[in-house]
Picture 1 (spheres, rainbow, N blue to C red):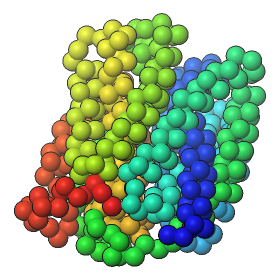
Picture 2 (tube, helix red, strand yellow):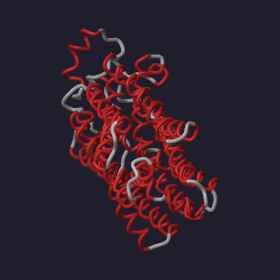
Picture 3 (cartoon, helix red, strand yellow):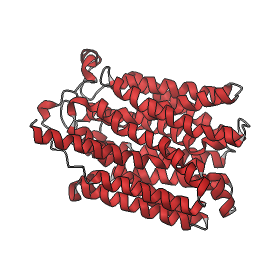
Picture 4 (tube, helix red, strand yellow):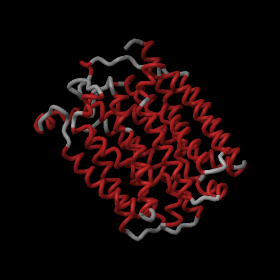
Length: 405
């Protein structure tokens, strides 16, 4: 790679990190549930459903990102996503009923976040085929760090301004960062098949979807997303109503989740360049399983509660960091945005299902039991799945190299 291309790809990485940091701010949503509940005179559970819709819209937009990039290019799509994100938060500030909240904070903000998230991530990974795990960790780590950074930004804004003004300023700051990041990005060149050591050939989306491994990966992804997104969306509320913590103590759950989420992205992302990525996913699943078992079967106090949600957040952050590279290992790099895009629908579906189960069956415990059952199935899948077209012996031979491009 010549010096000019090297400069472009590092500028693209910088723009991606900046954009991901701003897009990750949506994970501070639980800070606003109580105030929005009071403003709209609606139950917290109904207000929190906006985050589930946001996650679903995010996933839908992510699944379409490949088509948008083909037509408009990464820079224009990301620029548009930034402008839409600012508009979504501005309209959220004006919301005076649940329907408007769902449309603005759920659908509009979610579509904007999703249009920028997977597109910029996949494009950045393509620029660095030799360091897919590390670059994913940097980019998605910034997404996780955004939730931590904006926790303090949004708390400071709430302390000084009204709820409405806070949403408007949040939108302005996030929009400015995404727009600035988009100006640094360029579309990655097509990868040569010979450069890909982890897949026999590039599968089209149709070819990939005919493989049973594709749907095994999809269920594994959906399960970890359900556990992570559900806990993230109502963490503060779980602490108050389930563990009976004071409101200020329960609010620390946001910071605990942000740190654990970021740690999972960095630790497991870097680890995925040193060992088979599917084994990294197994580690993530065991972490989520430990957290869910603690929430369900251990008498909880503040430290144990924070430890349990940290395990779930660590698993979630690590999984969504490793998964783009894992999908490219199985199905090739050139069609990654499309192949991962459909799997990424599990991000939104998992969040919605978790919220619906909680609403229909009486709260947190019903969702926790469903997640526990799915985690056991997903763990079995990760221990038995093989790459398409390989036997068990061939897989064993290839495994030491699976994590390296």
